[in-house]
Image (cartoon, rainbow, N blue to C red; front, top):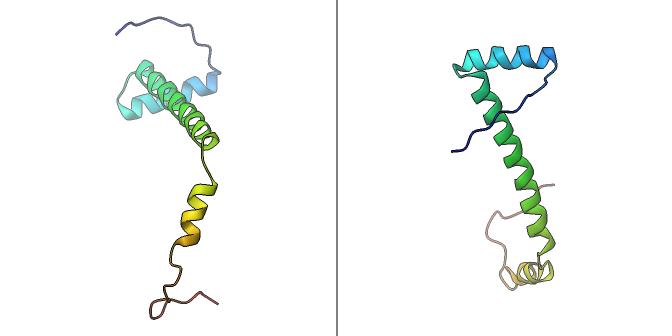
Length: 83
């Protein structure tokens, strides 16, 4: 794994909280920051992934399937909508 250095400027309050959390978790501050960045990247990439998938969706096709589901089948006993 290639490692690189990067000068990170954090607000003093953020740095203090990060140090406290790293100590409480028993990890190095560097490791805590690496994991936090990885989690944020993952969340952002996941959002992009789902937006791309949604753009490719064929909405009429699943709606047509849902329209057919249960047609001609009577409701089962006690199958009622709440009032």
